[in-house]
Length: 197
Image (cartoon, rainbow, N blue to C red):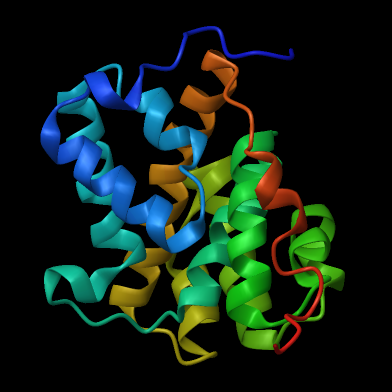
């Protein structure tokens, strides 16, 4: 598929609050990620989606602490999105993962096989749990929580891992069904160290 199934709206036709958020992201990233425009065709859903996204991925924005680092949250998205075969999320969140972890190879490793990736045993346990939630949540039991506890994760951290996995399961499916494609900029982000001027 070379184009989205649903045409993206013109930024200038969107409600002011959506425009403001997208311009803020554009100022920071240099471009507007396609997910912002693709979901904006339904403003109420856009607001709900990004409110929950931010509560999970930027917990400090809602006054909540998290035992997961920014990079670990992106690892969960990248690994589970790969299992759900979501090109958009693997490429976009893989780029963010490379930047947060300062490791140009980590996103590809996590997407293909997190068990062989250059990550810590703690992160491997986190992704084992996330993959189980992604593929077989009905089988999660106390032993899965015990495995997380052995690596210092709390029950609240387990909730975060599960909620991020579930939220991006929704995102993956919407991206796949709509034919959402990653912005070309995502492919190169974090692969080469920034050169100092």
